Length: 224
Image (cartoon, rainbow, N blue to C red; front, side, top):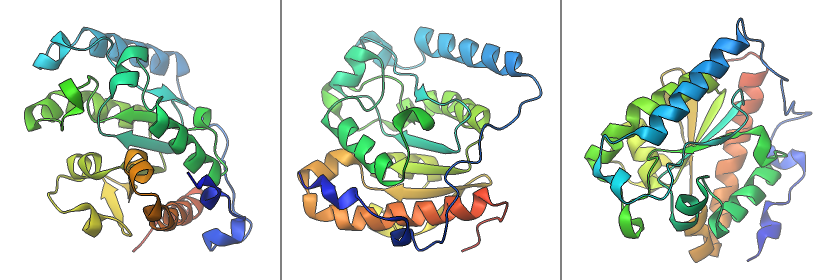
């Protein structure tokens, strides 16, 4: 699949001596945060706010470092994710892991979730009312993680997160905002599996995300 395109040296990011991790952020009360995460997870597992709860195998909550600097938000669980209860575990998830490695990150170091917590039948696009039903859960996840940068993975995730109908072609290559958090839009790895030629464009998106993170992690707000 040509995944060697993701293997790059730091100079490709356009920054010198980047700091990849700022270390664990301190919390005033870790036990309260842990309780909130568990409460939220239980709410998602028991949610019946939209009809998707009737057809799902598992609610797909999220996975990874709950205090991560990087937060990745995809569209919705697919078949494999529904069966396992974890986001991005199929072939697209394997490619996503390679994309993270290109950023010198491991899957366990970031937090990964989806706009929807339940699989739409047949992997169809999420309906607006389904996105709306799941939105409070996503907002609470973002608030708990408090990431330094968000990667919106694919068109639907980007449009839902940024409240826009703009096509992916207009959303890529720019830095957006979710509240005060920088958001970079990237191709969904499932699309990259179908269209390998787009990996070079995807690499530019990853470099942009890295530059944003490098600046923000040094205490400098990102300005377009």
